[in-house]
Length: 323
Image 1 (cartoon, helix red, strand yellow):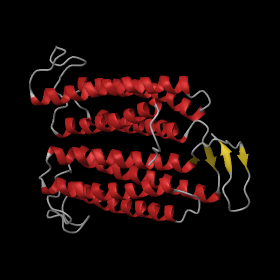
Image 2 (tube, one colour):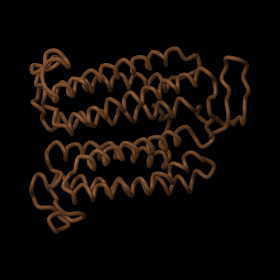
Image 3 (spheres, helix red, strand yellow):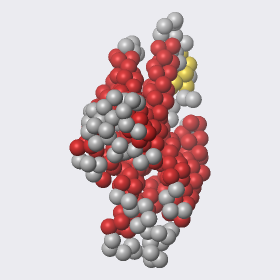
Image 4 (cartoon, helix red, strand yellow):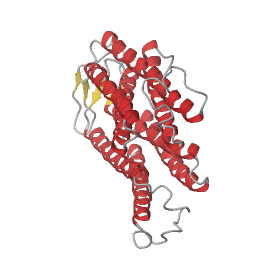
């Protein structure tokens, strides 16, 4: 959505950090879906040693820890690089500082998750913190491409667009929370057919509590699809140049359709670990795409001649220096 031309080292660093964070979330999902969370019952060692035993669950869990260590190092490097090289980028610097305590909290939650043998509330918090980190890192990466002297778009049209993105983010959060509750409540396998549910043909009428929860998730996904389609349409109505946003909106719709297909794949593969893992990985990519669409939609890329303020006529964009 953003790259144009050759990447600078700083842009490459921020992009790699975001990409590997997505990989980490996917591997974390693999840990959960394969039941490998206690493959290493101690922390930071694995069965009392630095090299895990050649057992499937231990290797998967230790791979997750190893990738987490690399991501942690990349986050630290991104934070330091931002503070050193972006002296006039207030938002990027604030995020670079805020991401550090969140990283520490995430590491602590990972430790507690193992020590307390996977309590659902800690596992859920661990995942939510990962998404928060992904959001902040995605914003830092977007700022690196928009430029330190990007300009903020203050037109009424762009304000309406940003409001729609925020609504979409909230809708997506609801879909993901209900999806997480499906897993936590053991309702994942409550319906074994798709798109209908053999165990509860009529939503909220047939079946038990687990089928009700499962149906709730399916129906909120449809609401989410409607919101994403609405956002896609709103991008086409923008009079201001918005090629990046059109690309992002198309990507968003594609990811959402893929997510629905992967949800169906869970049923058809009898809830295979790879399908369950892909479901969360695509959800993380969807969330990141929405975050990027908000950041990119708020600013215009920096130009050689940097306006401090351009006051437009009514109905036209008003540009203001970075903020």
